[in-house]
Amino acid sequence: MIDDELIAAVEGVVRRAVAQEVTPRWRQLGDDEVVQKSGPHDLVTVADQRAEEQLTRELANLLPGSVVVGEEAVHAKPATYEALHGDAPVWIVDPIDGTRQFVRGHEGFCTLVALARYGELLASWTYAPVPDEMAVARHRGGALLNGEALLAGSPEEGKVLEVATSHPDFTTDAQKRSLLGLRTEGVAPRPCGSAGLEYLSVARGRVDAVAFSWEAAWDHAAGLLLVAEAGGESRTVDGQPFRLAGGNALPFTAARDAGTARRMVGLLRAGR
Image (tube, rainbow, N blue to C red; front, side, top):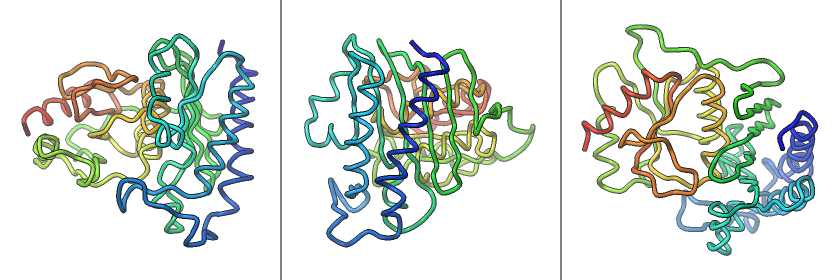
């Protein structure tokens, strides 16, 4: 299913949707083009909506019989998310990951696309349009950033771990307690920005780990495969692999290597 032709075709679809619907609206949004969904930190813009509509049309056409699970479509019709449990190949789409940053005119946003089937991630695309960085991962085929191999490596021995964590507004009391386990000597936690860009930072060895308390597939699918194919590892707080369709023990972590992932799980458990 996944060959070089499809990889290149999806990259073209992503770049085209962003060029037509996202970047022309960056720093050009009107007040009537931004809407709160569930709160002040959960925004949607006309750029999100139109980019997802275009991605949905073009991705479905690339792979007959496939379906699309997009953030905005699921918000409008939650049952759409059930496609992750089905037999058809599923495109998982976040048209703008980091919408808050996009609305504020900051550069920290990206577009995320992943392809999965039977709960297994097959390929992913992470596109940051402002620096024009395209990261592509293929199951058991490695990870590339603008055509160059991505290797997460391992943190230097004795180095303070830099960790991006969930914003407090998106955590339960129990999850907050778990994340407090990261506030210990040798770890420097900070609130995350765009989840997709944080995963990219792990895959390129610039951030040591992430710890997230929500499991929406569009935020995590592309990045989880990217980190895995760059040599990293992810685990939920109970030490199990992350399940794409949900039902995970939270928080969960993705880290540069297996040792760091195990350390993160231990700290998250200690905070309970």
